[in-house]
Length: 159
Image (cartoon, rainbow, N blue to C red; front, side, top):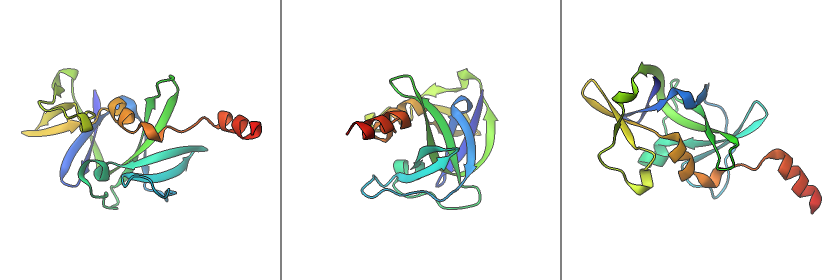
């Protein structure tokens, strides 16, 4: 299995490849007043409005540094109603991938309710690397679910 390696500050993380749609360079984001600090904004991705989360802000309380290797990782996840949603995740030093077997992933010895999306780890060169579980992360960010455009249009005409 292929995993994408990235950093948040000096801490290395991975995401399993089957969730990744695309890796995008940083783009200008539309910020929303009163949103949580880790919500970086929205952007137009192929005529779809995509919410973007700053992973370093979410996990460590500091925003990602804007470097040439800072990217938006576009990931797909499934909503409870079985529709697909795309989410952008800002991360630093998004530059490499690793091959790992499913057996390489071990359940984290400490699972906190607030960060249950950090449920597995892998070992690489005597380092413990946390894997971000996108289904759990999407559940944690449930408030960012976007309405479907056709439903919005009907609702605005009904008023």
